[in-house]
Image (cartoon, rainbow, N blue to C red; front, side, top):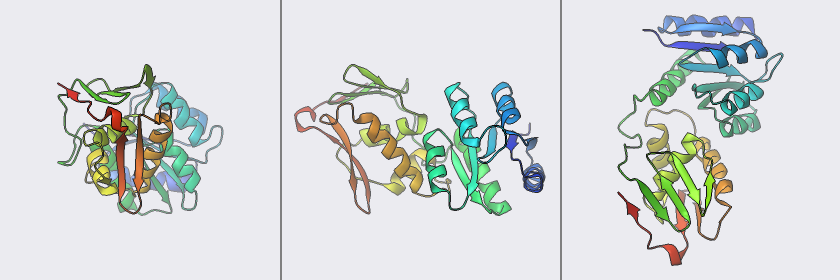
Amino acid sequence: MARKLLVIEDEPTLSRLISYNLSQDGYEVVLEEHGTSGYERARREAFDLILLDLMLPGMSGIEILEKLRASGVKTPIVILTAKNAEEDIVLGLKLGADDYITKPFGVSEMLARVGAVIRRTSGEESEYAVPAVSESKISLGALTIYPDKYEVTLGQQAINLRPKEFEVLLYLARKPGVVMTRDDLMNAVWGFDYIGGQRTVDVHVSSLRKKLELDPGSVHIDSIRGVGYKLVVAQAKADSRSSF
């Protein structure tokens, strides 16, 4: 059965070009040209992926993304944005977009990104994906991670993490104090076939850091300039162990 994609793009020529090439690549494509109708369709119908322009009439792409994620819609979303709109890209990733494509873009890039996101989010992971875990709990100072539940607590407070933030934290927590390069994190969390930039890693780490600031004396993420990141646990708590 063909994968079903929703394209929310208000520029007719571009939307037809996107639709034609996705259809030629074997996808079933549904087009929406207005933000409000696009949001309603994305909310009520099941899709394998949504291509979402950020500049739309009626409701902006950022608003659509935020409302969909707030309502529990987990459909993978790739945002379409202008080449110089870095703030929009960062905000989109923070709100839960899975990837982005900057305009103008080539057909090959679009198909590659769409295919990579679908493989990643549908369970068709590469050999570099985060492996299935058997831990019931990982404790590091006041930080406790429950891998099988995708839950995190800091002290007595639950921390609400997006899926990729959780996977970044889990990857760092398995080797506390060890520097992980951006490539390590990219391959482990996003998969070897992910063709986005390392900026994606930085955005997710930045958001994760803010959520760990509830108890910065217990655990925090250090940047190693030009290399990557490591999870640092307060010395007094460094003897905490994983339980299986």
